[in-house]
Image 1 (cartoon, rainbow over the protein chains, first blue to last red):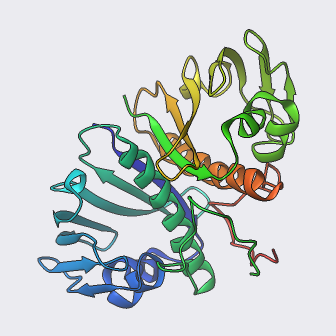
Image 2 (image 1 turned 60 degrees about the vertical axis):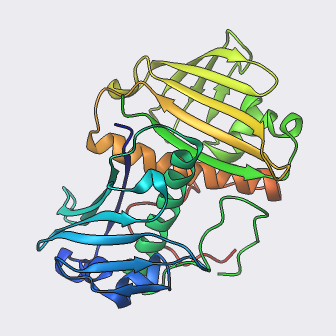
Length: 151
Length: 151
């Protein structure tokens, strides 16, 4: 299965990093600022991007891991899982292993989503490191003109 | 096989984008500024990152596609291929489909390389769009502290 896999690390402790994934405030700060719903295990999260977007069932929340399952959204995402696993790495930092698991094929949309997830991982790292991420609609652009950044 | 797949697009025409992959000047401008060797079909390219790094045999160069094969470097990369395919997309822009093909497993290094390739795709897009990328050693950091950018 052509999973999407990314990793970043941060000096922030796992306990302090988890709310980026397990709270609405956190999710609104790095993925999309149109995040609503219930981020606890068993809840449903709605992520919107200027209109459409996926709904996720929160399947698992532990002290260092979160798994969501896509219950509504783009056809290629249906029943796939989005997985966040934090662990302490050799240098004592917190590594995040991100997996979007369950794709059927390496379609152009798969290429697109792999690239977008990576750009949102950079946003998440900035949020964890600096307190400010780049969630939609101010997300890093992979299409269209590159705007010279002022920060 | 757990391939790494990414895509970006740019307004630059395919003919003008190709030298980013097929010339030393181009490669030095977005991946690593320690790139030497011969970028034509049949040649060997040496990419270094402050010391070590992979050697690639240039297997294929067409008007819109480049394929390299890893002949020396990290063990998990040996005999894998790095593939760049440009095509015109629906909006008339140039899409680049990037594939690092031939990984044996989703190891931590696979997660790392997927994320780093994505960050170098952003560098490549900035180079194509603005004339300036972020090659090693000034590459986007996915570990360690995030430095507030001034540009």
